[in-house]
Every structure is written in structure tokens, then in C-alpha cells.
Image 1: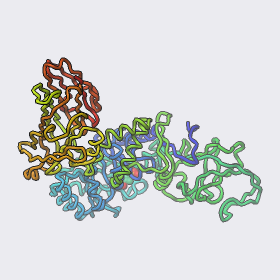
Image 2: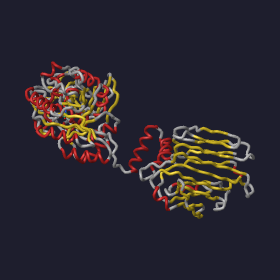
Image 3: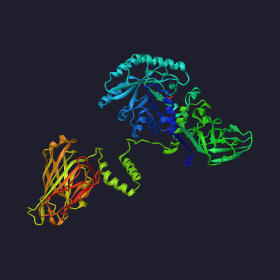
Length: 631
Ligand SMILES: *Cc1c(COP(=O)(O)O)cnc(C)c1O
């Protein structure tokens, strides 16, 4: 199944084997016990996101990580389940803990107080678990302080003390010490009745030895990844390797009796033979201590590692395996063989299977398999988060590149980006400004004193956050001239008039500008072929930042010969109602709508003397939408 993979080295993550291991471990749970999947260190090098998803599907009720950054990464990837940070957090991590809804572990009081204070400021309640040190003497409250700490923390109003736990020092091979830890933890529990919702003590190995009836949660780590920690565990559980580390033979060579291989001549051939070069070294996580003692499988045959492990290469003795050729796949760790189980490899140098999984998983490209099929891969350099400190321009480039990838069409993506999104992103203060309840009513009447024109009254109302205590309304009779007003933030509204229209304050008269019920003072001036109307009122100062109702009314003259009138939507708008009332002399009006947004086809209603174009009040309409009324 890995025929198509041709990297120098890679890991295959078998999610079926992971599910199998979880099922094996679940057999050992007592009634009412649930499990937390430990996914710290990118799920022991297996990939936090995929393992978390699979574990949640298998029934995990909680995830455990090492720090706030790991929790944040999972949140960015869309994981909604509760996440416990197992180790003590720094005070600097508090904002991220609260932003991402992570559960902190409390091991001392000053952190608890700081967390409660910050949560209180944000009017939040932060979930926390209290950790008790029952003898491992790593993090956690010392037993003699634990009960009073528990009471103090219960009294902190912005914390929700959801759980208490402790951790075994040697559950895989020290029954006596583990029993003592269990006893001490139970004594602590007896003093804090009623118990919080979650009580947990066991890691995966402890599940095989100690069943604490009061604990309703166990924390599954290393065994779920298929590594045994003690020979006694083989007969109790049937575990499968989840991670398989693979590479390829890049070269084969012959050796003569007496030849040395590798740095410092640590291996010497005692017969003529063959050996192969595999492009994997300790920089790829293949531990240096496997020098002269590791082995790999090629074409089903076990091949010893000879000589020292180099930074980027190892050498395998192929003498006993007749046909190995360049390009053959090499299994370095995992697979179906017991021999290459991670704990078998680390036992050769008295190392830690936890460490070997992490160090291999850190660098290798990962391929995920489910039901024998590759379902996804994770690239070599993993940055599965979006930084919050990107500059705007960089973020904009990333977004525009992402749209282009997704649409697989550069031209359309540029259109979407520039026409739709850039307008929204343009506002530097990061508040998206939009209009809602947009109503625009235009009424033509015949009572014009000007020959060849309709007297035109317009009434525009909409809701929006007020940005300053003044704004401009601009009016021009050419698109080119009006363009520059789209770049200015103090221009609230723009009118494009017909080209054979004289731009004078008499021809385009703003009769009323209001914010809520406050009538604004207006002043018109001609400037560079435009009419600018400055609108202000000292009372606006108190309304800045709040949602207000804008009203703008005008009286103008519209040339009969024009035969069309357009209304454009230039800002993101929620809910539109544009109505054109016309005199009896106009027989028919056609409304040509060009809308983008949630609904491309707004309702067009026609009456005897009006046409109205409407959307539902909650419907979003993107900039550059509009309607042309042709008469
Ligand atoms: C890592 C960790 C575990 C998981 O332990 P395993 O031995 O991998 O099952 C459980 N609890 C805590 C607090 C941990 O840090």
C-alpha cells in the first residue's frame, strides 16, 4: 500500500491499529469509567489532530496536552472537545488558555489566583483540574497542602473546579509504590467530598494493575500507540504498532572480509558480504544509540544495522538476504513485526519508547491509513496554525493564495479577492463595517421646473456603526472622478449622477442628513469636478462606536433622456430594499439586478408606479452588487 510513497523516509500511521488498541484498553475500564486521550507532543509523534479525531470517535471524553500552544493548535484545527493541559502553565499562557477554552491544571495557588482574576475580568469561568502529588514528586500540590488548596480554589469565583487527579511514577513495573500512591490519593479524596465531576489517576499502564473505584476517568497514552512498557503487558493486551517508520535502500555494495563500515571503524566484516545504504540518520530521529545494535526489515528479512548511525545515513548488513536491491522498501520501526516494535528497539540501548516515537514523529512526513487506504498526509515541516502576529499584507497574501488554490482558477480568485474581500479587509481597525436595513427610495415626478428633467427625491436610510463625528457625501458625474472617494474612509456615501448633469448645489441638493434624530449641519463645496457635502453635528461625538440610523435625503433633477438609473451597493450590506417610484408618463420600468452574496436573485416586485428590489432582512449582499432601473 505504500508503493506510491517515494520519500527518503516517512512514517505511516495506521489509524485502524490505533482504534484496535483503544478497544483493547476499553475492555479494562470499570463500569462508569471513561477515558481521556493523551495527545501531548503531537500525540507522541503520531499527529495530534488525526489521533484526537479518531480517539473522540472511539469515545474519548477529554484530550490531554502538554501546554497551551498544543491546545490552541487543536482548537485551530476545529477540535471542540474539552482539552486538559497536563503540566503546570506559565502565567503568560493565561490569555491563550482563556481564548481557546482550555482546562488548566493547578499545581500551586498563585497561578490559580492569576487565572481566576483574568477570567473574572473577561466575565468567564475557567475550568480547572487540581493535581495532587502522591509521591512522584514532580508537579502537583504536596499532599499536606492539597486539601486546603482544594478549598481555596473552590472559593475562587471565576474558576470551575471540574476535576482532581494524580499521576503514577512507575505503574508499569512497581506495584507496591503504585498501591501506596493509590492509597494516598484515596485518602485525599475522602477529605474533599463531594467529589468534582472528574477524578483521575491511571495512565495507560496503570489500567492493567490498579482499578480505583472512585476514579471515573483514565488517561490513555503510550499503550494506545502500541508500545509495551513491560514484558508482563504482552499477555494481558494485544496491541498493534500505530506508527511504522520506513525508508528505501539507496545503494547496495559489496564488502570484503576485514573491511570497516562507518565512522570510527566500529564494525568490521568477518566475511565477504553485501551491505546497503539507507538515507536515514539520527537527524531523522533514528537514534544514534542504535549504532551496531538496531535492525531493519527488507523484503521480509531482518538486516542488522552495522557501524555507527550517521546524521543522515545508516548501513545495513545484507549478506544474509540474497536479493535486496536499490529502491527496496526498508521498515525501520513498527510494522507487524514484534521485533521492530518501538519498545524492542529502545530496549537495545536502554532507551525510552516515548522518546523514540516523539523524535521520529517530529521530522518524518506522515501518511495516515484507514481501512488500508491512505486518507491524508502531513508535510515535512508542520506549521498547522495561523499566527496572530502576521502583518496585514502577509495575511492578505495567504488568504488570496488560499482562495486561488481552492478555486483552482487564478482569474476568478483575484476577482473574488479584490471585488469582495479586499473591501471588507480594507478597514485597518479590524472591525468589519457593514450596513444593515438598507432602504433607498427614489421618486421621479413630472413637476420639474427644468425642461427635460424629472424632479427626483431620494430617501436613503440604513444602520451602521458611527465611525466619527463628521462625514462627507460625495457626488460626481463620472465614475473616474468618483473613484478616489472610494479610498477615503470619511466618505459615507457616493452618488454617481448622469453625465449630462450640471453639478451645482442647486441641481443636487441634500435636503436632510440625520443620525438617529439628530439633524446634521451640511456644507457643500465643489472640488475637482465633484460636489462634496460635509455633514457634522457636535452631538455625534457621544455616539461614535455605536450602531446608528443614517438618513440622507436629496432633491435632484434627472434627465429624461437618460432612460436608466442605477443604485450600487458599495459596502457589505445586510438586508436591502430599493424602491423606484415613477410617474404615469413612464409606462414600464425594467429592473436589472446584478447581485452577489447569499442570494443572487433578489425579489423584484412591480406595481403600477413602482418597482422594488428586496432581499430578506438577514441576507448578506456583497459590494459591487446593484440594480439598474431602465425606463
Ligand atoms: C503523559 C501522561 C499520561 C499518559 O501516560 P502513558 O504512560 O503514556 O499512558 C497520563 N497522565 C499524565 C499526567 C501525563 O503527563
